[in-house]
Length: 392
Image (tube, rainbow, N blue to C red):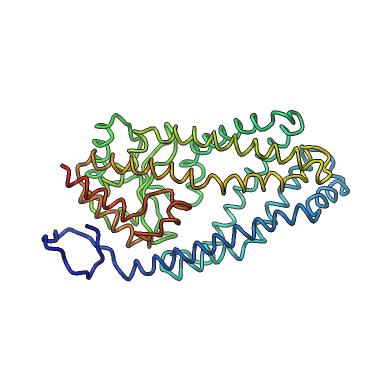
């Protein structure tokens, strides 16, 4: 049974290797989670207000007209300039909130190792990467709106799905190295375990790497990165340095479970359904908004706030459903890890240690889980491991 350190022991002897939740860390985790939820609510409200005001005050149309008045009349140039100004403006407007949530708060709870300069450099890298990609995506969408005003949402969905797959493929070799250092793991014994685990499940592991999470955080994590030939296992150095081989093996087995269950393919399918539904809703919003706000047509870039409002509303409505789907797939991956390794004690131990280290709230309120959690709570996952051990 999962219990707090310092609690009275049960009648059964406690194994020497058992790890318990730290009550002080859990108190901090609950507090940290509450603050983050409040920040999320503030960001959502302020973002919604900013977009709505940008639309109803005529500021969006004024910006587009100002660019036209400055001689930017080519549709491609107009869309690019408008999107760049909006992207940078939004980033600057919410920079104080990003600073507090991304730097001040993690430092307050001992989760960040970044310097002010390091945080700022990462933000500038994110802007330098996100701005051209965002403008490129916007250019394609607005070109489709101009040439295929009735079916643009279908073609835009196909384009965005293809772009997602491409970014997933190149991420380990082009994007992740901009922020983190990936180093081939030199631990032959652990590499052998991982490869044998993959072979037993019919999967191939292209490489096992460590990623220098410690350069930015004290939290631990592991993940599969990339697709096909770029796919690799990345173990956070904060995980590799502190966890036993048995614990790491079970964590890797969980990630491998996603591969065995084809969660990437299923996830893309779910993402496609949600994406096309969101784009169709945006299509309906544009049809209404063109006349309601006097835009020149669906391809008028001044109507961008309508697309953002539609996407935001759809995301809020469908978030609990997509999170429920994700929790189901994560539970299946947990089950796979237990069956593939036969080490439920090590997995329960690893999950408990992650909760202590990452300030993860072990038993959050149920409404929080339903609305916000893409993974089952730590306590639920540990209980599942213990129940599985009891059935062997």
